[in-house]
Image 1 (cartoon, helix red, strand yellow):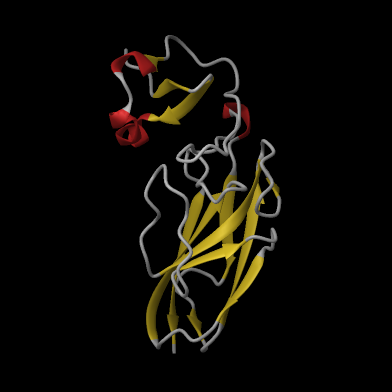
Image 2 (cartoon, rainbow, N blue to C red; image 1 turned 45 degrees about the horizontal axis):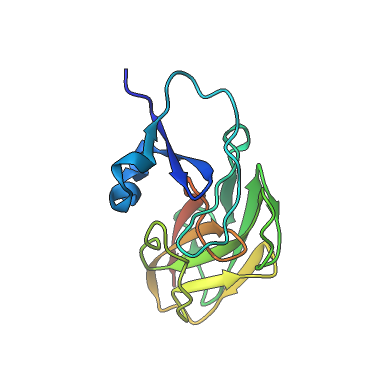
Length: 173
């Protein structure tokens, strides 16, 4: 039986990530990839901060994010308040590199950031909510269909691994 999680030795810290993200490991040497044997009974260490290194939540406390407003498929006016909730983690301002913390980023009508890279900051597309806020008012959206993805990143704007994200689609009239 092939385990669904792989442990990767990155620096001195073992990391766990889902097999769906194994493309991230392509550049690692053969000796760096270790397959987990048996059931995972503990939690992965958390960390981050090194360039190109993704933060991780302990296995036992998977983080989650939910966009609670607007509702999926809603029709809204020219501005829309995006309201977010998290579970399994604590919101903290950008720069905070403590385990189990992170902050929101909004991706507006764009793709998720590349795995293993910091979330970009592009006006109107990638919005950093670096003060640990849970609401953001989007203004100036053109009439029509729009999609917003909420992505939680660590203090260095690296997406948490596994990715902690939620998506909502709405229409601006």
